[in-house]
Every structure is written in C-alpha cells, then in structure tokens.
Amino acid sequence: MELTGKTAIITGAGRGIGKVIAQKLAQLGANIVINDIPSSEDADKTAAQINKDGGKAIVIKGDVRSSEDVQALVDGTKETFGSIDILVNNAGITRDTLMMKMSEKDWDDVLDINLKGAFNCIKAVTRIMMKQRSGSILNVASVVGVMGNAGQANYSASKAGLIGLTKSAAKELAPRGITCNAIAPGFIQSDMTEKLSENVKELYMSNIPLKRFGTPEDVGNVVAFLVSENANYITGQVLHIDGGLVM
Ligand code: NAP
Image (cartoon, rainbow, N blue to C red; front, side):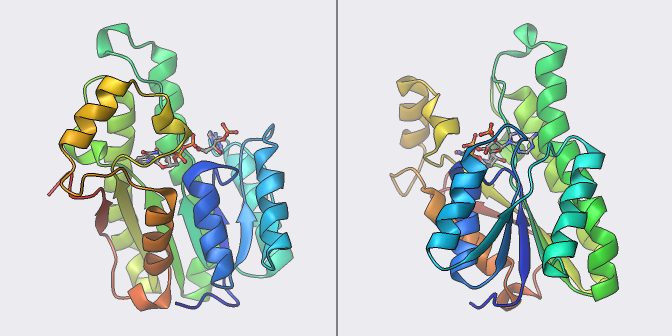
C-alpha cells in the first residue's frame, strides 16, 4: 500500500485509535492533518511524533460539532497541502447509562459528535473531492451500531446512523469517483474501553471467537487498506474488526 502524495484528515487523532490511524497513514507516505478538540495537547504531541519519525503532519484543532470549525479544518488543509484525498471520521465519545437515566444532554452530545460531526466533515470535503473526481471517506462506526447494546442507546444510535450516512454518501458520491466506507470495531483496547468494568470486559471476551481484544493497530491496518487505491472498487461497505464478535 502506498499513500505518497495523498493528504489525509483524521478527526479526533490526538490519542487512541485515531492517533494510530494517523501514524499508519503517515508511514505509508500520506500528509497528515491531525484534528482534535481545541484544548487537546495530545494532538500536538502526536503530530510532533509523526514528524520526528520522518512523516509530515500538521495540527488543525476544532470541534467537529461546529460547521465553522470543520470549514476551517478543510480550508487549512487545502491551503497547506493543496488537496484532500482521505477523510477519516474517527472523533467519537461515549456517555453510557441506561435509557431511563440518560439525560437529554448525554443523548445530544453523543449524537452531535459521533454523527453530526461526521456529516459536517463529509459535507465540507465533498466539494473538493468532487472537483478532484477522487477521494476516500472512512467512517469509524462500531459493532454496537449493528447489534445494539444495553446502556449505550445514544452511542449505538449514533453509530447505526453513521452506517446509514456511509451508505447514502457512497451512493451520492460514487459518480464522482469518491468511495465511502465504514469500519465497525468491536472491543479495541483504548482509553474508551479502559473505563468499562471487569465484568463487562469478561462478558465481551466470552463472546469473541478469536479470544483477544483488538488493538488500535488492528484497526489502523484495515483503515490503511480501505483508504488506499487497492480498495477503490469497494464502497458503501461496513467492515467489522471485532475478532468474530458479530458474524
Ligand atoms: P478515545 O481514546 O476516547 O479518542 C477519541 C478522540 O476523539 C479523542 O482524541 C477526543 O479528544 C476526540 N474528540 C472527542 N470529541 C471531539 C470533538 N467534538 N471534535 C474533535 N475531536 C473530538 O476513543 P477511541 O477508543 O480511540 O475511539 C476512536 C473511535 O473509534 C470513536 O469513534 C469510537 O466510537 C470508535 N470505536 C472505538 C472502540 C473501542 O473499543 N475503543 C470500538 C468501536 C468503535 P480528547 O482526547 O481531547 O477528548
């Protein structure tokens, strides 16, 4: 796989899975734009590390919920690198609790970041990718967007929505040579899953045929394939990276 000369925006890339995706795409030669929330210090560290390792990365912070921030992200990327070839909508949060206890804010925050944030980013890159007549969009969904999960009604709904958004974008953008796919990771070791109780972790493990949790590298490797030219006849698909949890 070869991404030399391509430019990739990865949202929420200061830490966790997004950071590893950014590192992986940088290793393959892409120019990297690290986005994260305005107060993130991790974003600067991640970009510094990529540049130290011989890659090319800049940071453009901004909240994906805000269409103004997202426009600034896209304008800044175009100004620095001249094109936008890859968008990875990775930014995401959880606010887990049972529905009867879930506040309206918990619902809105999760839907706004996980789903509206992806819509904002797709909308903003679309004009540029359509002019180029090429581009690759990758949305980071989740297995719970397919199978649901008690205590995650907001998160599951946002990820199911993201899968619908992926398929619609794939159909709308295909005539211009732009692909849009989603990945559905299962249990991936990160700060997000570190918060879960041992009971919940054991329950997940008992249902994973490959009998191990995934790593951010497992995800990064698949993303690298899906945004590369090797995958340019694949669009509108949801690829599970879950050790066989959902099949
Ligand atoms: P994480 O460690 O919590 O990282 C999420 C990143 O998104 C953080 O850098 C966070 O910034 C950033 N972010 C949050 N709100 C944002 C906003 N409004 N605008 C821009 N950036 C924002 O989570 P992760 O485990 O790496 O997850 C990454 C993605 O994978 C998410 O979409 C998640 O839903 C999905 N996923 C994860 C798993 C898993 O098992 N970990 C499984 C399935 C899917 P701060 O650090 O500054 O808060």
